[in-house]
Length: 174
Image (tube, rainbow, N blue to C red; front, side, top):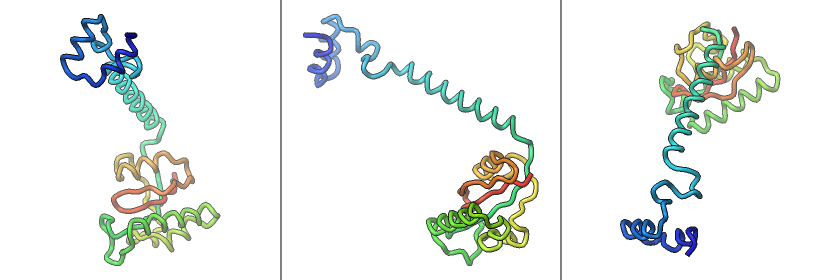
């Protein structure tokens, strides 16, 4: 019987009997791994580790290119499950996300960021400040917010970003 056929016909056999039968026939595929699986565990683990290291290096390089601090404004649309929400906020998470996306469309359509902030933000005091957060350092804000803000160019507006506080639209100011 050919080695490939032997693998498929003997696959239902289990444990030591399969190993003994294959070893007595001179087959060594169980000692390594079948060629059709794409490699052994050692290859997979080292490949995965190399990919993770490359990703971490790319993130370090990106952070090194960014300034130590930036300025930003934001719109915050909260929902009933948001951290630190006012009592008046009762919308669901899906409703909040849809509202944030509508606000972003208005900005992309030409409305000023400040005008949309006044109408859309749920952040206490945010409308009066025009959403201005001032200048902050990396790591000072919630990670997802900070990562999105630092990735922006000056005057660029982010996509909708979710944090434990709700959904944000961020505009980098400096």
